[in-house]
Length: 145
Image (cartoon, rainbow, N blue to C red):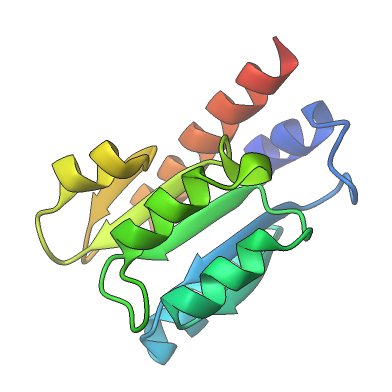
């Protein structure tokens, strides 16, 4: 993962920091949020967390750079699918990779509103890392072409 993240970082010249994969993780379960944050940070990512859909929407409406939006389905405020749909309507977020995580079987709904990938919970951390590598690599290729 570290080598792959290095490759991703080196190809994205427009990233303001240039050395970090930046993730906004929206998850209302504090334990899950802390675990995912720690694991991704150990892999070299910068992770900002948010526990409410409305707050997350305000955050992504701002100008902070994010390479990935990682969203739980079941959130207070806006649910994950509403957040994905609204984020696709924000011009500077319309192409940002989005992964939805859910304990419910909402894959078709997630894809319909604009999620790049859906992962059922519980998700093994190696599957999550592979998913992040997949969607971020695809996004970087699309930007470079």
